[in-house]
Amino acid sequence: MMLQYENYLQTHQSRFLSELLDFLRIPSVSALSEHAADVQQTADWVAERMKAAGIPDVCCLPTGGAPVVYGEWLQAPGKPTILIYGHYDVQPVDPVELWTDPPFEPVVRHDKVYARGASDDKGNMLIPIIAVEAMLATEGTLPVNLKFFFEGEEEIGSPHLMEFMQKYSQKFVCDLVVSADGVQWGEDQPRLLIGFKGLCALQIDVFGPETDLHSGIYGGTIQNPIHALVHILNSMHNPSGRIEVEGFYGGVVSLTETERNQMAAIPYDGSDYKAKLGVTELFGEPGYTTWERAWVRPTLEVNGIWGGFQEEGVKTVIPKEAHAKITCRLVPDQDPCDIIKRIINHVEAHTPIGVKAVVHSEPSTASAYFIPQDHPGNQIAYDTLEALYGKPPYYTRLGGTLPMCNLFLDILGVYTVTFAFGLEDEKPHAPDEFFRLRSFRRGQLAYCKLLERLSQQDNSYDE
Image (tube, rainbow, N blue to C red; front, side):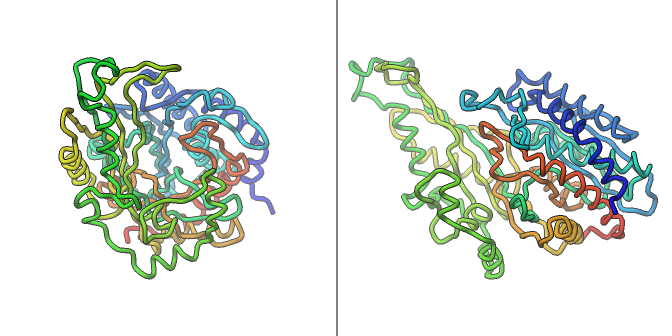
């Protein structure tokens, strides 16, 4: 027999979709200062939507950057208090010319909605709000106490939230965090994420002559900043893909045989993997499988490089400067600040003569996160997903970073269980990002079921 909240969810799907489209139209790009007003508008939109769902106490809390939208429903005495986390900011849209439709003019095609932020994380973030609305509208109550923490800086590493959490720690006291930011394995195969990589980010600026120079007159007489930058970047890996920055792997703990066997048991088709990415060969640190490299081995990637003339045609110059952006995805027991220092030392040691290299770190810094597989919150999420999908979830990790997980653990002393319904093929951070509306609908029911199961657990989540 269909439960009342299930019927409510089915009845109001057209409205929920319309609201999602409104949410996606606001260009809440946290990385670009010109969108600061849009980020604030998005926070206000989220606050109003939470109030409309029946959450009685909602406010936007200042952080020094984008506000945190907070709400609470604390009317279930004796039941656990669950903090639901998500983020309303999105990535920049460049290169915009590769989008089929304008990135902030959402389009629905084949039961998918296309827009920046559709999968990461607006579609996923809206799901628990809708689930709470359905339960309150049909039952007048919730099975657990709830707090909500929706931030607007996740895509830039949540730089203001350490100080914010220390200031407001008592406000967010809870028994467990549930994150609405994450991915499932496939449309019909669930997963439980038990680990995220950490992050550090840097920019390298190489300076040469005082001005761009005529390459016919001065070519061959001075160091070219682009050549020098390429040399520096190339020195960071050996030809097989291993990182050559001294001490980079110093804190990395070796995988146990059990961990390697667990990852090996997850289906993997190398040909299919390559085909989906449009590459002819895979490449990475030798001695590890694709899943191991993606999930539990640290990386150093060049994210952007620029300098000199880049327009159509030819301009024969030696540029005065060149630049590159680098990020490292880190694993447990690696200290982001230590890695930054090691990269700075490496750049200093490998800068060719005739140029000056300056390295500065970006605020996007976070430690890696891991939750024990047998944590009670994981077990409840596992059971919920298994009942919903009709098959058990895979336990996996993710090469991405969710900075708030460690903040919640360090400051509140609670773990975060990931419970979200995006898929990795939905092009988060890329042109033509989309979200499957089937997942949007499924997630709403899943959150109702999860809250019911969480109510059956006592408050002993602090394992």
